[in-house]
Image (cartoon, rainbow, N blue to C red; front, side):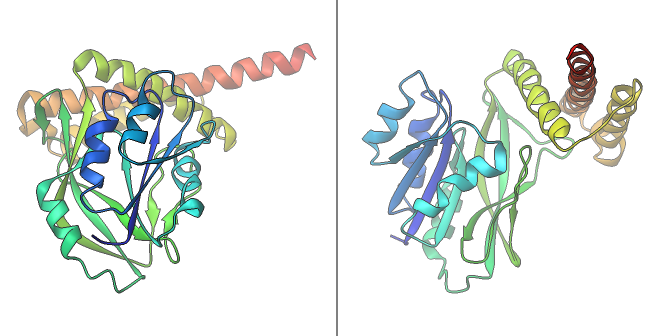
Length: 255
């Protein structure tokens, strides 16, 4: 087994964490779970897989994923979300990697699922993500939303991570609500401003990008679904940003 530390961030992921850690156990000799206050059985399940648990209030996407890195005993880190699992081809690829070049990080194609349905349309596949890296040269960007790993070089393994993105369409809408709130807060903390028409402009841009430039209009109902939900997400995060800034002005005026 390679000397790799697997790191997963969690919050109430009892329904996901078992399969995630089971897949990591095939390539890692150490597992770390950074939990931000789970009230379900997430931590108990993680301990059964030998994971070391660290409790940390959620810091934002990049900082939270970087939090466990200093505690790792290995320099090579593989980072998965709790709803991700290594595919058999990715497992085999990682097991065969020499990991002799610390300048190189490794990317994987992510298969995004809604329930049991694999969504391939409008940029959902191939969705290349870097997940395996050496902490001496690479790491997560300090971004509170949609962070990614910065590395001197990336090698595309062209193998797969299975991403159980949404349980069903209702879960997809619920997640958009939660993620758009998180994104709005992250933009506000960066000092981002938006006008009254920003939600419309960004949602229309997102719709055109997915339908035309990502080919969604030619990819059937899945293409339309991805385009519409992406536009909805864009609209909501800018509308919520406006709401946050407006509330902040009201609170400042009352002081």
